[in-house]
Structures are given as C-alpha cells and as structure tokens.
Image (cartoon, rainbow, N blue to C red):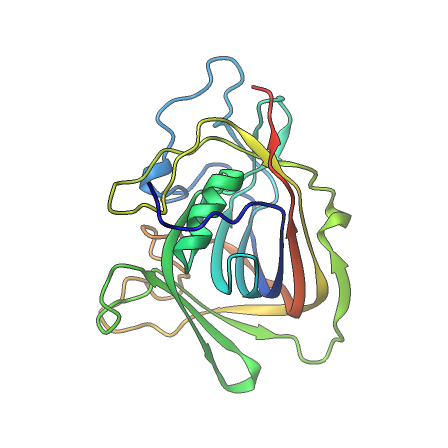
Length: 259
C-alpha cells in the first residue's frame, strides 16, 4: 500500500504557465507516450487510440499553490483522439510533474499519465526564462535535460484577461492507466475511463520561443526543444502564450465515461 497521501478532487491551483502551440500533426511522433503508457491494443469497434490531429499544445506550469502543494509540470497534448463516445477529444499523452504526491493523485483522480521529473527555471537577460526538464532519477550534477526552451515575453503589448472556457473544451476523457513498477509507488494504475473538466484563467501575454543554448554532451540537438526520447521532438509556432503569475487552474470531480 502506498504511503503517499490521497488528495481527492476537486483541485484549485494558482501559479504561472506557458503554452507552446504545435504545428498541426498528421501522425504521432516517437515518444508521444511514456513507455509505461504506450498503447498495447485498441478498442475493436471505436478505435479510441486513433489520433485525429487538431490543436496541439505543450504546457509548462509552475504551481505556487495547490491541494497537493507547490509543483512544476510539463504537458504534451498532441491533438484530438477518438473518445469512447466517438467524438474527437483532446488527450494528454505525456506529462511530467516534480512531486510524487501530484503524480500519484493525478493518476488516481483523473487518469492523467503523470511521471516524475526535475525542473529548473533560470532567469535570463531581457525578462527571458530558460526552462529545463531532467530525468528525475539521474544525478543532478551530471544530468542533461530532455526538454529545454527559452521563453521571451512580448514587452510592448499589454496583457489581456483570458479563460480556456472560451475554447469550449468540455469534459476531457482519458483512458485507464497501467501500474508502474514496484519501486515507483506513485505510478498507480486505474481500471476505467474517466473524464474531468478544467478551466485555466488569468492575464495572458504573447511570448516567443527560442531553443535553449546547446549543452556540451547534452541530449538535445541544435535547434530542437526536446531529445525525442524523454519527450517528443517539437515542431512549434514561434509564438506562444504566457499566463502571468496569479493565474488559476481548476480541476473538477472525476466523471464516469461510458465505454
């Protein structure tokens, strides 16, 4: 039995967030899933692992407060998949967080396929931020990031209020999760589809993305944002969205999904 505390939904969180906007995808790239969650089969009639393309995003979030405590997060949403209802729905296929309590409860509460990683946010000149994400289990002194990017906020356009409710995402259905190895007790498995509702709101600005400086002996090739193993390689638009500190995210109760 896990000693990690249960933190049931709903959750209300505060922090700051960056979005990368993906160029439209026709097929899923390698490393779109963590090895544990790579689909081993499919529903014989509905084909719920079928990727449909659509609006894809990468989210980097720093939660200053949440029911599970402060933590950081990197999310990959490549686009839409066929849901059990047959409708196209966005799906999180790969996600990292910085704490075991968030990993465990995200998986248990909503089937979010969280895994542990270590995050580093380094201020740069001109208001830019270097964002790096590392393998949680590698020694810090020798680790090289599998994801790295520099976010530069647009300085001359004022921030504007925004809520994701305007995008009409509706409920987000996610498939059940396999259980991780015994030495990763936070990687709890689930048995049924479920769905949740989410709203992100706050003041936003346009930001610009740049590849991080190349590290000697690093994993990420020049001009790339990820190594294609720990996180999929990304083809993004040069501009993105930054939610300023004080933005809020709410996650609803767990909803059943008819299969």
